[in-house]
Amino acid sequence: MIPFSVLDLSPIIQGGNAAQSFHNTLDLAQHAERWGYQRYWLAEHHGMPGIASAATSVLIGHVAGGTQRIRVGAGGIMLPNHSPLQIAEQFGTLASLYPGRIDLGLGRAPGSDPVTARALRRNLANDVDEFPRDVVELMDYFSADSRNPVHAVPGQGLDVPIWILGSSLFGSQLAAALGLPYAFASHFAPQQMMQAVALYRANFRPSSHLAKPYVMLGFNVFAADNDEEAAYQATSMQQAFVNLRSGRPGRLPPPLRDYASHAAPAERALLDSVLSCSAIGSPHTVRASLNAFIARTGADELMITSQIFDHGARLRSYEITSEIFSTPG
Image (cartoon, rainbow, N blue to C red):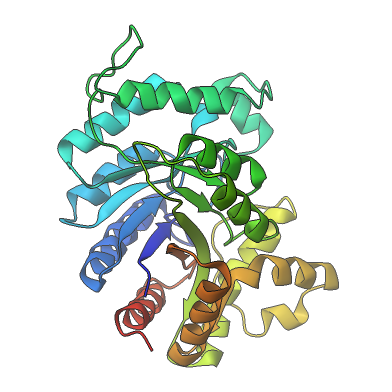
C-alpha cells in the first residue's frame, strides 16, 4: 500500500491546555514512528482556541527532537504571514539540527480570520501573484548558488523538500509549474479535489526537485474496534467543524452520542460535505474506505488526520490505521 503520514493540529480539548496538547503531540509522533508512518506534519493556525500549533517551526523542533527517524514538517506554513527569508532561516535551522528529516509545506491562506491576519502581517493586499513570487524567493534562499544578495544562514545549500498545499485549483497549478509535490486538503475541503489533482498531473513540469507528479491527499480516519465506538469518537470533530463554520470556534469538545442525528439539516449537509473524504468505523470498515479512496484518486500518499478528544482513543485510531497499511488486503 502507499505511504501513510500524520497531520496533527495539536488540538486543545475542552478542559485541557496547550501544555497537555504538546505532550500528546510528541507522544503520538513517537507512536507514529514505531508504527511506520512516513512523516508527521503540523499546521499553522492563529487565533484558534482549539489549535496549539501556531508557532509551527518551534513545535516541529520539539517533535523532531523527541523522535529519531520519522520525517517532520509543516503542513503547512502559511507563507503570507512571513517573509521568505525568515522561513528559510527557521527551516534551515531545523534541517541543520535534524538533517534529512524536515519537510516544508507552503500554503497561501493566512490560517486565521482577517483581524488576526492583520495582526500577523498588517498587509492584507490580496495579490494572487505575491504567493508564487514568495515561493520562488524562498526556494532561491535554499539554493547552493542563490541569486539573492541576502543569504539565509543557516539555509543556503540545504536540502529542505518544499511542497505546495492547496484546497482549490490555484495551488495545483503552481505546484505543477514549479515541479513540486502537491498536497490537497481534501480532509476539510474536498469539493475540488479531483479537478485539482487532474490539473496538477496534466500540467506537471519535471524539475530538479521532482521527476514526475506526486500527490498527497488529506483523509480523516476515526477508527475503533467497532463501528459504534468509531462513530461516537468522530462526533468531537463534527461538533468542532460546525462550530467553526458557524463563527464559534472553540476547543475540541467531548464526543456526543448520536450527534449527527440531532443536528439541523444545514449542519448535516455541511458534515456530509466535509466528511466525504473520511473513514469512520471498525478496522474492516476503515480498510474498505481507504482502499476505495486510493483506487478512486490514485493518490501517491495519504495524510491521515484524526481529531479525537480522548488521547488513548486517538492513539488507537492511528494504530488501527497502521495495521491496515502494513498488512494490505
